[in-house]
Length: 466
Ligand SMILES: Cc1cc2nc3c(=O)[nH]c(=O)nc-3n(C[C@H](O)[C@H](O)[C@H](O)COP(=O)(O)OP(=O)(O)OC[C@H]3O[C@@H](n4cnc5c(N)ncnc54)[C@H](O)[C@@H]3O)c2cc1C
Image (cartoon, rainbow, N blue to C red; front, side, top):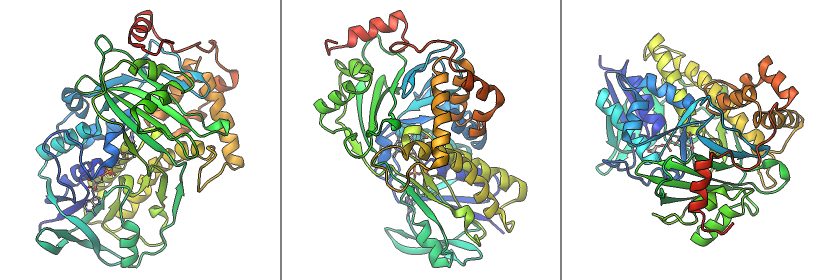
């Protein structure tokens, strides 16, 4: 008998889950309410797609495994993505000072528009598997609290039931999974929101001549001063463009949509490097502003009785403050857990869905802890405030970041966790603890660690008269 799997949502989590399912199902149908563009274009169903999306090494690795016969790294680089080494290819001002640049590059991340990333991943999955995408809005799940048997969907032709042997909800942060589960009789889903009131504002610029190899520049927000967070970065993307993304928290940190105020915001950051770089650059778009970027978590792994044949992945399961660049990597790591379990036991094994949901909770927990343990410090944050454990963890983390500004051992531990190539226990390895307790062997860098040539480029681009 032919086995059909249905995936709700053709975003990153959905397409990677479809790739995993294609190895064991006879038919995989991905349903999306949106018209999916033919090329790397922005679409309505992904409002966050206008903003910076860094793909960490920990997210790229599972993607490499999931799409059969395709090196996603090479595929994305060929499509125009840039590869940035965390250790040598960026200049970042942290709350504890500038990170040094080292000869050893450390883990790498990819930068490009989200539109390019989704288009490249979708294309690779569709070309290398029998997965099909269909335009439809899913209205609810069908089945019982013991087992999901398909979805009810709506198309231009009306409503219909689509039977499935396995369903993945990857419908993003607006997922109605909690309501859908309640209708099946699963009504004990615990949820948590920690909301710093983050606002993102992004504008694209043409990369100025001679600045193509300038390092990614980032001024991070400081959660520890009792003031709203304010941050900014310039990252290279496809098409010889710079994406300039600002982010700030509730109560006065919010970046503006007015172009002049946008530039002023960058110049008022603790270091004006972002503003100096773009002060004479040619803008290619207006400023796009988005809200609704809270940390939100659904503890699906903890419900008493989980229905068979249903898995929830990506933002439908948990969202994080995007400043930490983790959402897509968590989505990819989740799809890899699904893939591993499916290959081990096949589509129909009772208990498989619950096992996947529990395993997926691990990367979610790591990303959640990293984001929330910092967000609770912003003055306007709702849904959480620092407790005793947060204070202890923060004291250690701050000391480690300070050490990382002048210690390769500490810096490489921070990159590994930031890039999600290892879990947060990496920060507690004896070598890291020892380095942290000893403090930085090298003094803090004064100003952005740029080469002479890069300084000359910055001076040439700077129209601020600073
Ligand atoms: C401002 C901002 C910046 C970010 N920056 C980063 C970053 O730097 N790095 C990073 O890793 N992550 C980042 N993220 C997080 C990242 O955007 C998400 O984690 C990622 O999009 C999750 O993918 P997904 O497939 O789960 O959901 P989505 O990408 O949101 O896809 C969901 C899909 O489901 C479809 N859909 C929804 N409802 C239905 C329905 N009922 N029926 C059918 N289809 C439906 C939608 O049309 C959409 O195509 C950022 C997020 C924001 C908000």
